[in-house]
Length: 386
Image (cartoon, rainbow, N blue to C red; front, side):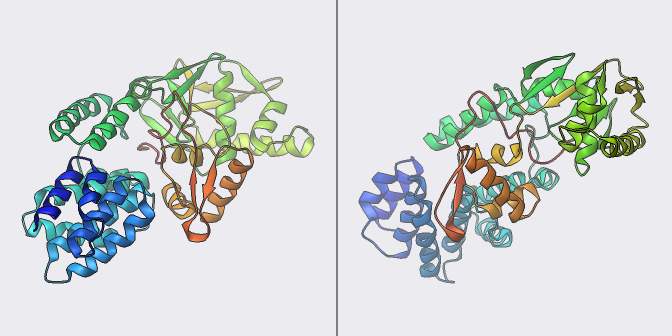
């Protein structure tokens, strides 16, 4: 490897992409193409980075498997940064195997890191945890999360890479930023992630609006696929220990401002279904004006809600991570259809909350961060339900 390539590689390792480009910007040999691609990625020009890395992989050829594997690794890194979650996990796995076989343990470890990050983004927390122990923040284990981040901070400082230090700082801030709201007794307050952890470990009856789950004494019932029942459960939880008028329940469950006999009949049916679903956790009793919730064991009922409650909150939460997302990546992360995601984006765009750039398959969506809140730690996958 010549001196210019070596100097450019050192500049990139130190987080100086402009310094690297000064040395190899006009070269088209395979090592220079690879370094140019990485430099463009560090500068944020991901659209130019991808073709440069692909050209480099082709230029290296089959006789240089380690160099080709590193290009695949860099391309996967760029894809993850641009929220292109449809890239081939098998190609990255093959690249990691090649790097391990040839003793490049640092890049092999980074390939594993990218695999885990992708699994976390698409909500496959169990798979991510099997691949890498310590997915503490997403599992609501704040103590080991803080310890792991402290170790990461020391390692980033020793490495002297500004981008890595900034990523660790961002993760640490998430632990000190409100992650949810607690609604109880007609009042509400913000909760940090460690307070959410403590709440879910308590003996309270929790209507969890972050995951659409109802919890009590270690038992949980998921209502993620039954939005009407969850809307009723949340309304009853917010009103506890009081009751909720029938008109209010109709509005919350069916979105109707008018209540007639047909809506009342629907309400009775849905309340009956809610009773059946929650029978081991709570009773739903009729009152003169509506219905009330009565937990069987807990002495307190609370509602755990997202920091910002609005329609399409899950889509908005992903977009506020500071990266640009495609509709296909959002659909994969949310486990829904692209058409559903597109309708949500159109609605958010009409309200001025998100914006897009590019056209066709290159179209990407972004949103400004919600200042003062961490919006993604409780998304998208629900906690274990027993």
